[in-house]
Structure formats: structure tokens, C-alpha cells
Image (cartoon, rainbow, N blue to C red; front, side):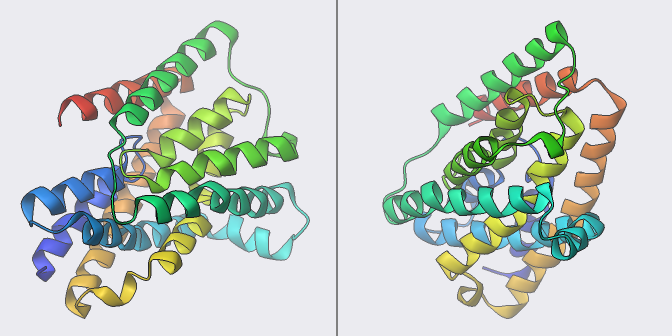
Length: 251
């Protein structure tokens, strides 16, 4: 893979990472169809692409992460730790199971899209959810982590899955979005360590993938956060759900 091709894939990763359309699924499809890369290698390279968008989250929410380090007993810290542990419970076995013989997640993606739309409709009828991060219980954290683990499968959106779970547990839209972004960091680190994909790419290609996914990911994340604040979260959820369904029809 050439550096320019890696940069294009990084741009695709940066655009799709925060949308509930599975960036992993989109970049794998591009690598298999455009570059002729095997599904196994495409999965590894797709996991590596998350390193740039993970760094974007670290910088965008640097104050929150510093707070997590300093206040080890805070509710956000416990949410990150517990959800990460239970992400491994589902994520690691699924990764090992599908590493060599992967099957797509189209049905799961459709389900996520429908759930997002349903969640948006529910929010319209019952008003905005009122629970905040401080109200998260241990059971919420466990369910959140288990759900996030399924996003190791291409086609299953991590953002869409975690947002849907948090909103259906009654967490307010803005808090749900922030939590979803923050817990992605340890999940991505774990996936990269598990896969060992860092050393599998030429240095120039890896650098191009990292830089482009970081820059585009940072900009697109800020746009998504701004959009979520400017419109009702009910409409935001329904828009994401429709976008998810359209992404399935596109393939």
C-alpha cells in the first residue's frame, strides 16, 4: 500500500469514525474492493487507522482525561474502567473467532439504524433523557462495555451502538455523546495491541494513515458535537439512524 492510498483511507476513517455507519466496515470495503487487500489484512489495517482518530479524542477531551487520571474515584473514571473491561469480554472472543473467517455485519448495522431512529422518536414523546454521567450505575457500565465489544466486527458501529445503549438507559444526549467518545480510547488501544497491526505497514504509509485520520477525525468530531448541540437530540438520533440505513443500501 502506497502512502497516498494510506492518506485517502485515513480521510475516510476520519469522516466515518463518529458516524454510526462503522468506519471499520467502510475502510475494509475500500481496501478489499479498491486495493485488493485480503480481508484479514484489511481488518488489521482498519484497526490501525483508529489510532489517528483516537489521538483526536485524546486532544479534544484532554481536560476530561486529565481529570480521570487525577480523580481516580470519579464516576467517569469508573465508567471508563468498567466498560473497558467488559468490552474485552465480548470483543476479544469475537476478534479471535472472526480473525481469519470474517462475516459482515449488515444485519447488525440495520438494527443499529432502526434503534437510533426508535430512540429519537422516544425522546420526542417523552422529552430529553435526564440522567447524567454521575447517575451511571454499575449495571449501565457493564451493558455499555459488553455492547461496545461487538463493534470489533466490521459493519457494527461503535458510536451507534454505545450511543443507543446510553440513550436507552436514560442518559442525556450531550453526556451520552461525550461518554461514547471517551470510552473509545482504551477500546482502540486494546484492539491495536491485540491485533499487533502497528508493525505491519511501511513507515511512510503508516504515517500518512495516522496524520490524515487524525486531522480529518478532529475536524469531523467538532462538527458532529456542534451539530448535536444546535439541534434537538431527538432529531440528531433520527438523522444518524437514517444515515446508517442509507450506508447499508449503498453497498
